[in-house]
Length: 607
Picture 1 (tube, rainbow, N blue to C red):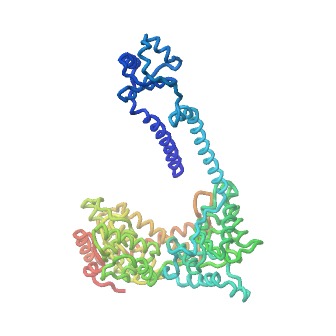
Picture 2: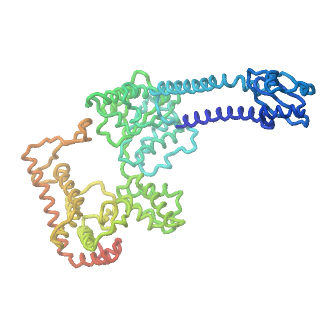
Picture 3: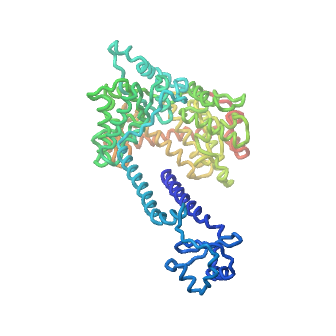
């Protein structure tokens, strides 16, 4: 588009130049009046003419009072023939100065040469731009196999260091060795140590893999080449391998440096599982990466850092010593890490004095670094929309719900009956969660629609947990089933509002049986093996390692877990019927209940 506009303006300039030339030529005759032959004959007969200049097709007349005129005549007709044709008395021509002249100057050359030169000029300009286009296409074709990696030089003013990355303490410690090697490689060489050629960053999306790689480059103060794994692969065989060679060639010239390959699973999946076509190209690209990282030619001071959230699909050759033999795991941030991340992203945001980032960190378990950054950004946008100068806790709490559940849907107005069903449904979740000692405590209840939900109940743990017990899972099942049970008990039938809860409960019960080995009747084993499928239309499928008889027992155990949790939830609902009705009444009136208001109604939680 840019080249098209440039060519358009060049053509426009050329035509404007030609138009100006014609205009200058035409303006030379603007002060001279054009008259007919009859006027000229009358002026000669009246002896008003002092001089006549004869050109090819015109006569330039000068009158005695100084006025000039132009008279057109036929090109082949001479002035003497013109006089004879009009029977002009020759005596009246005695006092007239008659001269035969040829045109000269700019107007002559413009009139003579331009009609011949203009077509050649336009053809020449057209050929020039055509040749430029062909050369540009050839240049793009020749650069098709070149790497598209973006380079950030060490002079970059916006470089990131470890101070800009909160949390992930262990990951930063691991990567400090890489930084030290890039700064002082001779120190390691003298000890006979070999720094890992490749570092693989593993973690869920949003945990800061790319940010951490940029921080390593910033700390080491070396060039940083950034490219995505998908940028290597094309439909043409050999292009990806060519781009890999070009990338490492550029990296060697800039060594010491860091090459960062984001989402390496796009090109580093296991070989031999494809059916040809693009997969052959992908495998050739992977082969070239393997050779460049640990082939016959050593890459001194070139460290490759790659990121992925699917390490299980990578080719084993990538993970062997000499390639990506160091794996750095980035976990979800814990409470302290979330607070530190919030402090970094809140530096340039005007927060109110009563804002407590500790409370925000407590309300955001499971949030990644990207989620926390998005939370603060949403709060800033919300405060701006409300014409506030500072961000308050109200905007931060509302942004948590928006990130978790989606935007508030005020246009989705529920009928009185639907509103009542939703109030009982959410109150059921809250009551069962509150009176289940191992369930997460209730933080907020609302019957205002958000995202796809007609209402929601937020329950969050008071501390970060890494291991869960069977009792905790059973009580979590009870909380999930509480909405469905209370709809059945109060209204005599259930609605579609429990669909998501039932699906989550079923999946959790299946994991208890097949993954966690918590079924007493089936014993201490797991069931099913997850295998990644590349070309059958799904990312993974489960391979059965058990018989049909065991499959029936698994289904029976899943139903047993769900029935037991439902019985437990129904018992709590019956025992706390009075508190339930109070919560429903307040919800129908206020639509939203915070933790403190909820505990005033039902009493403090007993753990």
